[in-house]
Length: 411
Ligand SMILES: Nc1ncnc2c1ncn2[C@@H]1O[C@H](COP(=O)(O)OP(=O)(O)OP(=O)(O)O)[C@@H](O)[C@H]1O
Ligand SMILES: [Mg+2]
Image 1: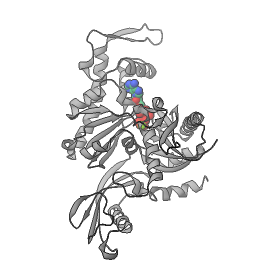
Image 2: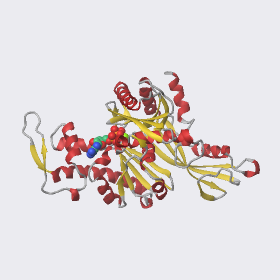
Image 3: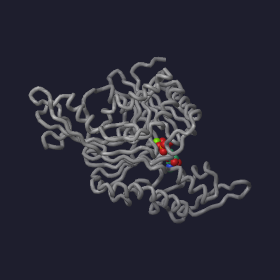
Image 4: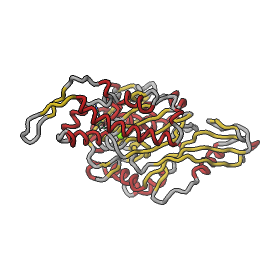
């Protein structure tokens, strides 16, 4: 099997692990040629807690994707999430030193380094430093200051940090499974690349990745991230509520949720009944679908309100001209967008991964948003070395420098 020219995204989620293979075709267009999925069992709330189980899921997902594309995977772009993730905004200033006061690439690097020079606890690592805007001699709103003339250069950046040990455990799983980690990428940043349009990011948009174990929040304003948060509760909680209240095993609660669940009551027919299968010899029972949906609605509304409260506190709620975009498996729950529209008071839609060539039917599902986004993130690094606002490219050489030390142990 050949290994050339492929970009692989590996999304190790709480409920599933998926590998997505991107390849350039003869017209130099990126296509998705392999998608592999396996059941995750080694994570809790987005964080690896069992290396063996996680590495098995990684091998299984990658092998399935390899089989589909006929390519051999070596390096992967791996996603990271979990309650340990935090995002902060920071600012740096430098004097322009280039000839004729022309701003050079080095000046831009220096100002970003200056913005990055904040105190980060020893147990945390910087995953991304993303420029929001540059200010040249008091003139703000500049996306790319290269070659402009000025004396004072300022940068505003969004810095995403997380736990060092969580990242180490992820890398360890992937390495032990026999693959190299090209980069570690915040899952919601990857998902943003797959499901958001440039216009939405410019207008202001709230991305919510409704996963099984975590709900990832990312606010983009003026084309760059301003707020990042991971809430350690997800769709698994909805299933577990149903399991407890309907006295049915998790697997049956999950099936009922997917088939008959809805989190927006106006969409539910009052007359409908749902069959709850009996356990341990008990006969099955029938309950009104409205009752089932009330349980789901109350948990979903609580999760949305948690997100709304944090966005409101930061003052971003009134800047969402692009509305709310929901992705991840939880976005497939019926009524998810309708309830979001009601709670956030702005338009809401479900985010499907953008159309790339290849296996369109396989990956055009919110469940694959992060996996496809990881491929797009990787492709961006391949395609251009130029400066771009709104992507995490400035971190290159950051977190990976440290990771290389650990990787040496394996390669
Ligand atoms: N058709 C559906 N209707 C309702 N919920 C669904 C549907 N399909 C998947 N889900 C829910 O989506 C969740 C899994 O989503 P996803 O695959 O995005 O999570 P993950 O990436 O494994 O987890 P995380 O990102 O939290 O680590 C589960 O809670 C599952 O119940
Ligand atoms: Mg996920």
